[in-house]
Length: 194
Image (cartoon, rainbow, N blue to C red):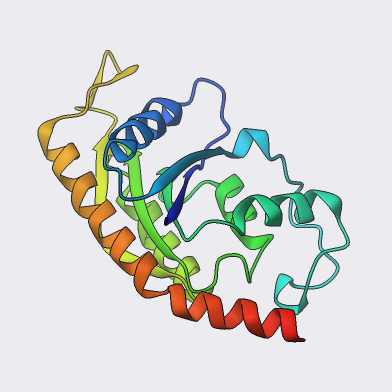
């Protein structure tokens, strides 16, 4: 069965992301056509990129990076739940992405973003980063406004259009994850034979 990691891309105190990520997980888990698992970056503290060589050139010598790679490698695709900070993606999410290479390649990615303007500018940046790593980013996304989609700016209240957007995002994500499976298999075979 296809495995999808839902990455919570904020580690701030008083963050809104856990509510959104839990909604994504709960909604996605009702589908029955894939396995979904939440990955909270708070559970995987990574120093600012401290690798001596780029991840493109092989496994890290650092235990924290190897543990992060082992966490990400088994998944076929990802949903990145990201806030928008100052017009871009949060540094902690970009840093987590930058620690790896092969673990992202030939996998699909979808986005659920939030912010004053729905987090759209963060997703624009992440699409470029993920594309550079050989990920297939799906066209649909969920954009959540901090101004209109939270009661008292604290409690997430998903609306019908959010559920519809998430359903389309997940449909595309699972289709692309399945379509990319032969490429991932070929890469794994090459790595084992090397």
